[in-house]
Each structure stands twice: as C-alpha cells, then as structure tokens.
Image (cartoon, rainbow, N blue to C red; front, top):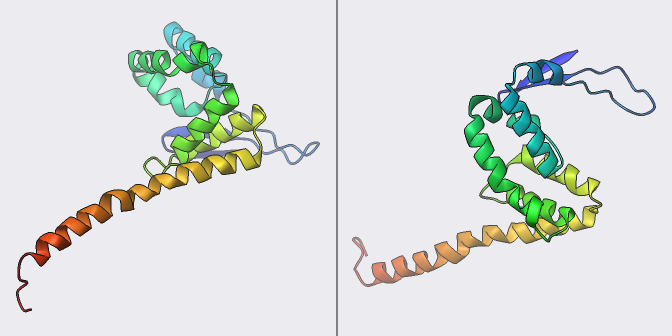
Length: 163
C-alpha cells in the first residue's frame, strides 16, 4: 500500500498487480465520509449530482467551511442545471481555464480532460482547446509593446546621460 501526501490531500493507492489490464485504486472514502456532518454529506451529494463527479480536491474546503463550499456549489452549478451547452463543451471551457497561462492548474486540468473524454471528446478537440487557450499569452505583447513604445518615446524626448 502506498500512501502519499499531495497538496494537503491523502491519496491512498493499493497496487495489486495487473488484473485484466487494470490497476486497482482504493480510496479512503469510508474513513472520510464518517468524519462528515449530515450537512456536509448532503452538500457533497448535491455537488456530485449537479456536476456529475466528485474530486478529493474539494474535501478540505467542504470540511473546513461548508458555508463557502455551498456558495461555490450554488454558483458553479448554474450552467449545469440551466445551461444550453452540452457537457463536453462545458468541460472544454474548464480545460481552457485550467490550461491558461494565468491559471495553470494541473489537477483541475486532469479532472476536466477525464470528464471531457468520458463525454466523448477526442484528442483533436482537446488539442484545439489548448490552441485557443494558448493565445492568451499574446497579451504579454498586446499590453507590453505599447507601454514599451510609450516609454521609448518618452525617453527619446529627454537626453540620456552619457549620450
């Protein structure tokens, strides 16, 4: 049994060799669940129903501040309850956010790639999401170059010491 600490979340993985090409993964779900209040268990169930999955990344937030978690649940579930985009497209948007240069959140990226693939996404579609999200980096130039030009112009208006 391998127990690893990663970003404050216990991952409990039991490797029993390869059975029919599968690796067996066991979680500490039962232990975790017994430590939740009735309200926390209900919130977890509501999240799972609204979003179609549960990830242990949320365990700490749910345990430490159920009010905050509930507010996030209500806010983030709106497109899943009332939205018109198909689930695969919603997951593409999450992938773009998690892969963007201003976010770079690998655990969320992995989760939403798994969800998108489960909803029928292809590797080509996910790659296109990366390509679209990558243009976010161009803002380095669209913001930076005009400032550089302004500063060069301002500096050219003044004599530099030593020139």
